[in-house]
Amino acid sequence: MAERQQRQASGAVLAAGLMVCACATGCAGGGAAAQDGRAAADPVRTLRKAADTLLAAGSSQARTSMEMATGGTRVTIRGEGAYDFRGQLGRLTVMLPQDPAGTVPHRPITELLAPGALFMKNRGAGVPADKWVRVETATLSDGNLVTGGATDPLAAAEVLRGTRTATYVGRTELAGVEVRHYRGTADLALAAKSAGASGGAALRAAAKGFATATVPFDVYLDDQGRIRKVRHRFSFVNGQHEGTVAVFSTTLLYAFGTPVTVRLPKAEDIYAGRIAEK
Image (tube, rainbow, N blue to C red; front, side):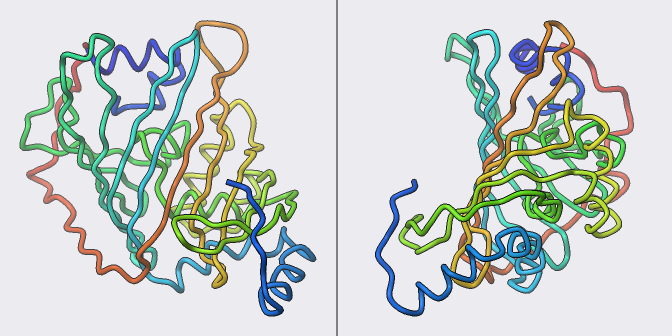
């Protein structure tokens, strides 16, 4: 039932794509002013390097949210967990929204993120409770930028490799950390050319599957160049009505260097049967 409701919330697009279902400028000293000058001088180059900076950082904790609105209905899916950027492995607990009546709670979905694959537990829709569902991300029309109800944190950063235009908005504060705010657009096809093998395949799929390969974004970097927050606007063709559906994906990164251990499911723990429709 929850899966059907989310398909209704965003049309036929989400039936294929959603399977689990601050700008106050601060004062700065001389050092910060110099950094701001460099940031404003070449924001495109700065943002194209943001994914590499995360790889150097190693790992972090993450919070995600995904918002969809169509026909007067708004759906928000939230996630929380940790990600190993060097190993390209992550674990998120994803919370589905309540039913409209607010009386039927949904069990959280556990997601494991790996190169080229997404694993989901508590998937529902006929999947045994002790089994995982495995999805090849390159086969998804969105490259897993929205399928899991949360954008893979590394994929969120890899999108910025395709930055076409960007402006430096200014300094602000985010969760007690001084950050630099940028706004721009990225090209998924360009990002795919610069990303790694598995990331590039997923981004190429997204470039073909979205309504447009151009992705508007806002991103906040700390003084080490690490992404603290990135918000993308992805657009889908709506299969039931004319026009497109906008999906806003937000990823927050913090506690860099957090130890992350992800154990992928064994073959016998992966569900191979048909996923029932509700």
